[in-house]
Length: 228
Image (cartoon, rainbow, N blue to C red; front, side, top):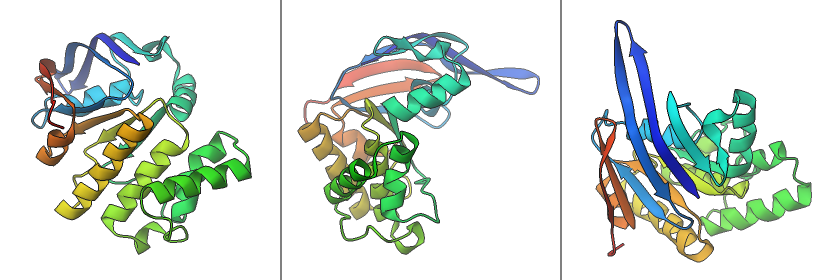
């Protein structure tokens, strides 16, 4: 599903350069529940952003299926993300003036899905994340855990090939974290949804079935977690 081949990303910072990602190569298959881990500044979020087309590498290939997204223009990337990649961010990134239902169906509106298809999938997803009774609530009327569950439902609404989650538990308490992880693990096992996390949260790492450790912009280990 995802093949990363010798990608590099360097940022200029005043008079010197920062090598955020240095020659990383890896493959992530359909149905994996993968955590990319490492200390702050290790390059894990940059790597996730490159895989998601939110940033562009200086060199190398990022193949989603057979499409090398490193070659796409900005407008082509926007369209590709809309139809192929779901995102969950640590700050939720919900639209504050929209209800839970409206937030979830927003991407489907951009995809020009019919009203009946939007309604059916939105209600299905809100039920899957345990929020079928919160459809008309706006973000400021929900807890952090509820907002993040709406964000997960929204990420899945467009039927993406995979979901990228950048520190999705960073702003959640322990109970909300376990609830969110249970939901994502259930979706992973029952619907074969692929999740790739960037995280330093041990609770997420313990649930992942693959742990990729990155440090100084390089992959230093890649292990399967058979206990998860």
